[in-house]
Length: 213
Image (cartoon, rainbow, N blue to C red; front, side, top):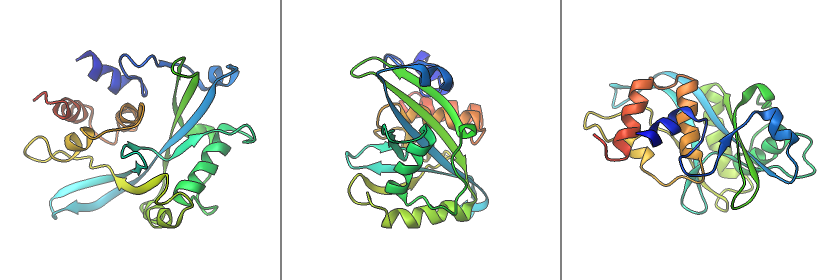
């Protein structure tokens, strides 16, 4: 139970991972740490229904990585990047074909920040950017022509935010996949703080994904 509460409330913190939550400002004052930025792209989808009966309500993007794990678009910030957001935008351009026609990612989109000491000194920054459904669908198309398609990125996927009647299909099954780093807990944190999934439903899905029914 403690691990579940850590994931839902910790902004990406995973029990036993050595991650601790800090502010963005504190992170920028650290020296000798690598910074990695990732973003949850999402859009309202109030009209779509799976099988004509299950409301989707919202679309959330993740991606299948080269190593077979799920993660969010983004990556390491390079020394030549002007800011964290500049580095994130560069990575998005390479991975999903982020275009100039989209609203830029800013500090206001920053959701959480964690730091760890081992196996390397690293800070992970998590962002969330709301798009229109048309823009999000455009990202799914442009990603197939992006520089890293078929290399670092094997494809984009939408996160099912519903739970099927059997109690395991949908979000619980999705959460049972393999995720890179703390991206699973970042997903749960983002869904909770943005209120994309009701907290009780999110708790139930998280428990069901670990075989706790």
